[in-house]
Image (cartoon, rainbow, N blue to C red; front, side, top):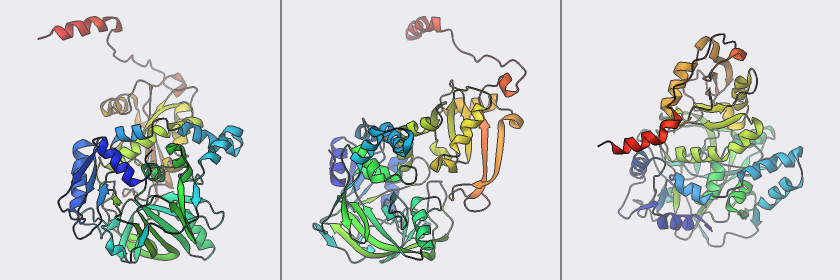
Length: 468
């Protein structure tokens, strides 16, 4: 079993999915540019990259830890996500004992001990934090597990949020308003208190992917990681600060004053644009601990394809059971990376009654982070959602704009959607690209789709092979 980041690096190396650069590489732009090229050339099968000599530092850097779909599939084979998600519903009263037992068995285990095995670091300036794109406002911590506790009920949230380094002791904390960290910050503001925060950099892939996963608010990401790992997540007690993974390479403790804001950005984001400079929360560093000879983990995003595309596609496949629980007639879902995930969602719908397609599209807009989706397009069973040629053919031939396109105004959108007129507020579009019948108010006869004769398939294959 992979126990920590170093074990994962060793696993990647033995799998042939680790590239190592032993010559010096500059954390300012150079490491990111090399990682970006790896992703552009190999897409969902790009290697993780280990830069053993980060220029100006004695700490190596590893990037692209989630870059290979095949590695993720092997790593998470047998991942009982359906059982876990069902257990969430069971625990809320939809059923009984098995779900509650699953949740109990996956709860993280906190080790009450000090920081043995760690050394204290004086400043963020001692870490090889990357500057990713030329017009970025500065260096950004891009793969932090940011851990907060609700001041009201004590529930934990773990998320990956970018952190712009302002100086050796302060960073930005880019909590979008819909994220769990922002919810905890708003609770702290109501109580007129600071919010203590822990940041873990460099842990095992189960913790990282669980922090990225769009889980419903209130579900403990470390429990989710425990289900994926098939073993409880071991946490290190940090006293007044939230507990962190006990296998973290680097641990940062500090606080956010929820009424304090500072301009953050621009930052080269996964949308393919630089984010606009806007006020964000400020994180004040109190303690930094690092293992002996630590490895610094970073992520690089930009135009598709980047590491987040691979991780997002993988997670969507594994979170389908949750979608099916809510709406069983949605038989498939795909968020194309070209749509920056939240801007476009394709669903395949099996119609059961009049208006069922529209109901399915509306259900997407009511589910967690999927609620931020800007455009939802529904298709029939004969369309492969991952074949963009067939997708655009269906949109072109099965959509009447007046009947099949619906605009919803004045609703919540992703704060990273720069097309909307104001932050986090805009419009959505629903497109019904399914075949129409009388239940849809279609009075004509729908034409039959072309298809080859199935009986000729073997003979055609035989004669095709004879063509010289």
